[in-house]
Picture 1 (tube, rainbow, N blue to C red):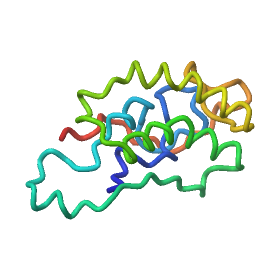
Picture 2 (spheres, rainbow, N blue to C red; picture 1 turned 60 degrees about the vertical axis):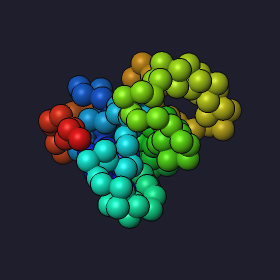
Picture 3 (cartoon, rainbow, N blue to C red; picture 1 turned 120 degrees about the vertical axis):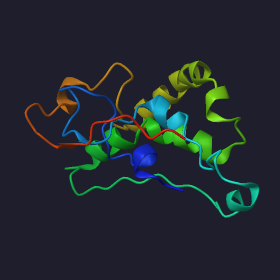
Length: 143
């Protein structure tokens, strides 16, 4: 499972002018954390056909490795927790606890030189004002 509306990490992380080259839907860190690879609407038989999940980063509009880092992190950490663990349904996941734990992970990303998107928004050198992009505004589909 890798629906564009949830786990295409080349899509922007927040609304507004500060996001560099706004592409696709807005998918926040919390949106990715609440992604459910096996939709509740599936029957047990249908759910057995979901073999895994993946996140995608389409790089044709990402100008360098720093921009790839920015688009992927920290959302890739949220996705990894969803994909690799037996977390409860999205509504029951504790996003506040995840954010608290991310504090340690941000220090790891800093030590590794990863140009991630900070929780408060892009750093001045990560912004690309005036670049129109291709936003696909609208709420994520409801499941």
